[in-house]
Length: 294
Image (cartoon, rainbow, N blue to C red; front, top):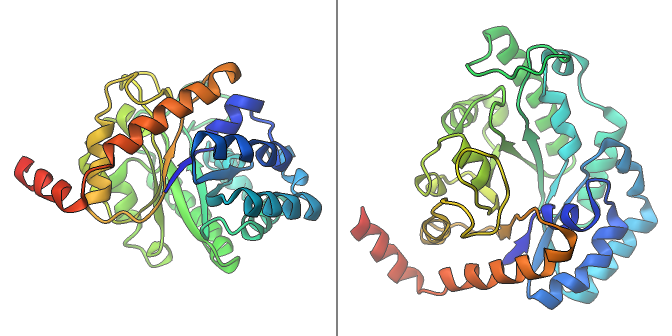
């Protein structure tokens, strides 16, 4: 299954896009050759755009185009984990409810994703943390994440985290450590190759992690956290995708490219062609190749 991350809609419409913009893009996605997409509420003020009428229209369009939604991203909720003050303020109940209702209404693979952005000890500070936060901050982070996980689960969905460079939790090992706690044993991971590359994580080894539920496949140089077309940076994306498939990943391969609106179709079409070629080999052959490579 091949799809796109919300970057597709951001590139076409900006971060203020809503369900009507997603709906208008579905014929375009089908024309390029994709099977699905990830929906998103990027800005908190756009949560109100997900009315009953708009959700019904989007569902109808999905059925007409034969496209599925692999995940719903509550990007705006990342702000709740961006500083000590934000953690203390808690979750925006009205908008969270609207987002969970929207996710459930379009059958998003029962997956609700939230990013953990770069963390600042002071809301007004431009200095981001470069080392582990204090035990007190970590406890508060875990408390808020536990509340979020409970709300997501109550809505019949599974929570997945997207880790950005400089976030309060840390890297993949910190994520796995969190998963050992009772409240997070069903927690999943959104594998954003661009973020993890900048964080210095070992790709494609990370692709073997069984908690990966969904992907954002993009490229960059490991220094600037960009979302470029595969081949435009130095991430070993071919090896990442093949390792995902060979180790039994059942989710969608969703491309993430931020580009000019005039280049969207060209960029995503070219990337999809490359992605399909990478995964064309027989799964058994892939396993043999990976075993030989160690």
